[in-house]
Length: 142
Image 1 (tube, rainbow, N blue to C red):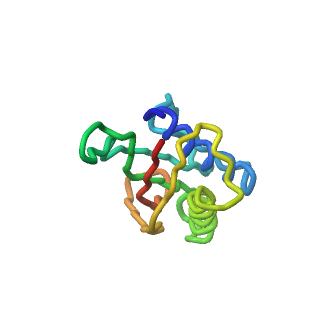
Image 2: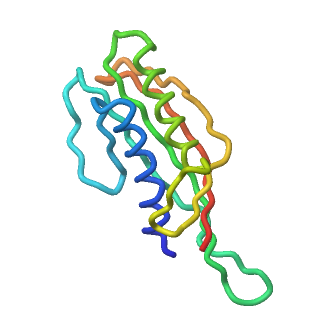
């Protein structure tokens, strides 16, 4: 197992669920090039950050990863919070799907998410989009 496999597992679950529930929403990951779409487009910016990459139980290191996932839900301004909440719920469903008994882990990293927080609104007059943030912590082991 590797950092790459853990990231891929989480990213795949988010992208697959979001594309299935709302194909008009673009999904962008922090490790890929990105050009901001126009003011009328909805998109989700996903950041996967690692906090721990091994565990040291009485001897050799064991592959154990933990970290956080932050999803910035970007929806057009001046449309109210309905669109933002709808996309945020899709993001929450995507994160929770990782813990589902039907989740298929093709990267052999066994990810699990814990408490999902948000959406928290971040409204700045200077931004072209309304931003709501959904976050959660995760663990994965090999």
